Image 1 (spheres, rainbow, N blue to C red):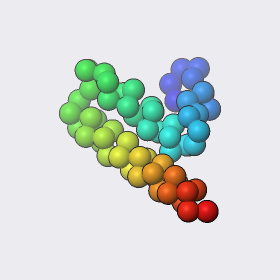
Image 2: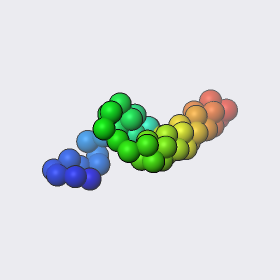
Image 3: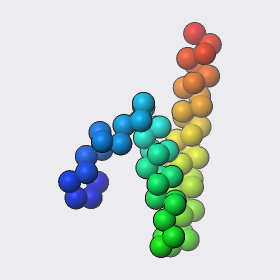
Amino acid sequence: MAGDIEAHEYRLGSPAASIVGMTQQLLERTDLDQEVVTRLHAIRDLALDIVRESKRESLST
């Protein structure tokens, strides 16, 4: 993390949900290199899969 921002300040219910939120914020920027954008999309999509799976598991219990 850069500067004085702590990871726990981004907590949105779960670590995976936090990753989704952080990557979405970054993807809203217009000054990112295309390779970075591609990697951020991949990270966000993986985290979304984790969040969705977690929700499915909690509904089945």
